Length: 419
Image (cartoon, rainbow, N blue to C red):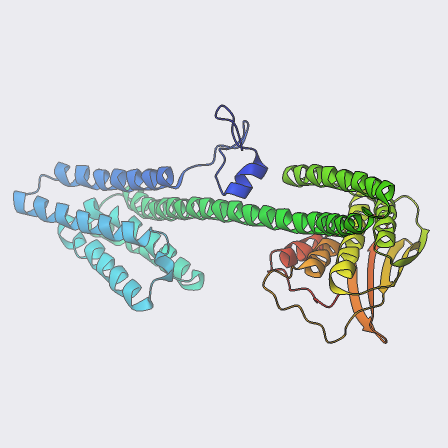
C-alpha cells in the first residue's frame, strides 16, 4: 500500500481500481466541458450579431420581442442538434426539429429581411450535423444560395449580396466544426476512461495468472516436502533436516516471487526450473527422464516455457498418481519445443470444484503473447502429454500483436482438470 505522502504506483492503482493523476509532461487534453462552453459561446455570439442588426433596424417593440423569442427557440434547437448523439436520433425526431428550425429561419425573413440572414448559417450547420453526407452537403449549398434572394429583392449591392451568402456558408461550417469538436473531445475522454478500465482489468488478470502459476507450484512443493518430512522424522532425522532446509528455501523464494509479481518484474529460467522440477519429482518418488538441448533464448520465451514446465509439474502432482515423467526441451530450426509426459492419469477424472484453477488456460494466454502454442493430449494407459512450442527469438508482426491482445482480453478458458 502506498504511504500517505506518496502517489500510488500504476500497479497499485490497477490492483485497487484507483485512478492515477496524469504523470508530469502528459498532454493536457481539452475537457468536454470546455469544448461545450466554446461551442455555446460561439452560438451566442452569432445570435448577438443578429440582435445588433435587428436593433439597428429600429423595429417596433412587438417585432423586436417576437424576434428575440424566435432567436431563443433557434438557439435551443441548435444546442439540441449540436449535442452528442443527435445524429443517432430517430428520423422522425430529426425531421420535426429540422423542419421547425427551417420555419424559424425562413418565415422571419419576410419581416426582417437581410437582418435575419445570419440564422440561415445555423440551419446549414444543422443539416451537416444530422443528415447523411450525400444529402447534407447539397442541402448546405442550397441554403447558402437562398441567401442571395433577400438582398437582391431589397436592391442591395452585389458585395452585400455575396457577403450574406458567404457568411451563411461560413457560419454553417463553424457550427458544424465546433459541434463535431465537442463530440470528438467527449468521445476521446470516454475512450480514455475505457482504456484505463481495460488496463486495470489486464493488470488484474496478469497478477492472478502469475500468482496462480508461481504459488500453485510452490505450495504444492511445500505440501509434498512437508509430508515427506513427516514420514522421515522417526527414521531419518538427518534427511528430514535437509528437506526442512529445502522447504525454507522454497518458502523464501515464494515470498520473493509474490513481490516480483506485484511489481511486474518476474522472470524465470527454463533450465533452472528444470533442475527444480527434477528435485521435486524425485522427492515425490517419480522417476524422471530429462533431455535438454537449448541455447540462448529470448527472455520472454524463456519465462513462458519455464511457467509451462512449472504448471505441468504442479498438475502432475495434483491430478495424477505418476510414477514416471519425461521432460524434453529441444531447440531446432529457430523454435523451442518443451514436452512433458507422465503416466498415472485417470482418463475419467474431472475436477469440478469451483477452485480447481485455470492453469492450462493461463499458459495458452502466455504462449500467445510469445507467438507460441500449447497442445495437451491424453494417451493410452493413462498417460498425458503436454507440448509447448515458441520461437527462440521473438520477432512478430504488428497484426500478430493486435490479435494476441484481443485474445488476452477474452475470459480465460477453464483448463482440463485431468492434466
